[in-house]
Length: 147
Image (tube, rainbow, N blue to C red):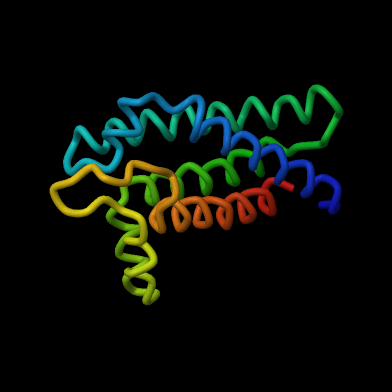
């Protein structure tokens, strides 16, 4: 692995993450992926599938477009880590529990709507910040594995 390959892979995964989470994800997936039971699992799996496909397109562009060397087995391993951890975080409850265990429950709830109200529909919440930072940490790990 070279630092250049790692940097290129991480940049590609980071951009793909932003595009997949904010442009590719459907409203149905965004609204449903945290729901309990099979409806939530299916919505989340659909999001993770399109998320992973977006990341694979970015990696293919690196490899085919500028010749970044990628080992298919390492790509498979790294993308598996990325997909599984993305699914876990986006089911909502595991990430909320992790925040509670880390002593960050108050931060997780920061900016969320008050019970029974829809008075702060925004991306500026603690839950969103923790979700994104969790994803970035695992993108780093995935890039290390791939590179």
